[in-house]
Image 1 (cartoon, rainbow, N blue to C red):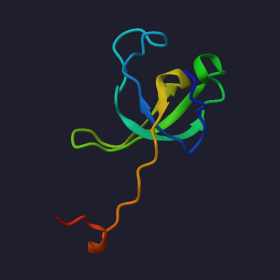
Image 2 (cartoon, helix red, strand yellow):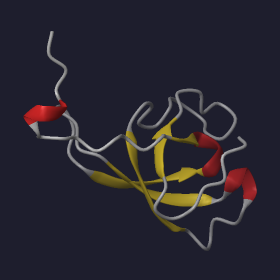
Image 3 (cartoon, one colour):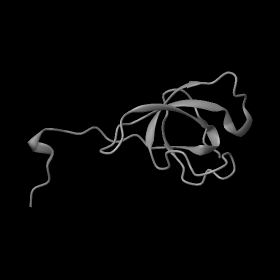
Length: 90
């Protein structure tokens, strides 16, 4: 994977984890924030990172470890404006 993983980065867990994991994928598609590097994991497969996964309608917030190759950067979402003046009107 060519994404440079770092603390604070918003990431999505990729669906194809067959290169790094035996068995089914772990939390595919979930989005979260990288919290820290596992120093024991080494830098094989892009390093082993702790990611705080966002809460969804079906799952609670949780921290899990992922190899850097299992993560891809998510572009930051634009700020949500609550001003009525910014809404497009027909």
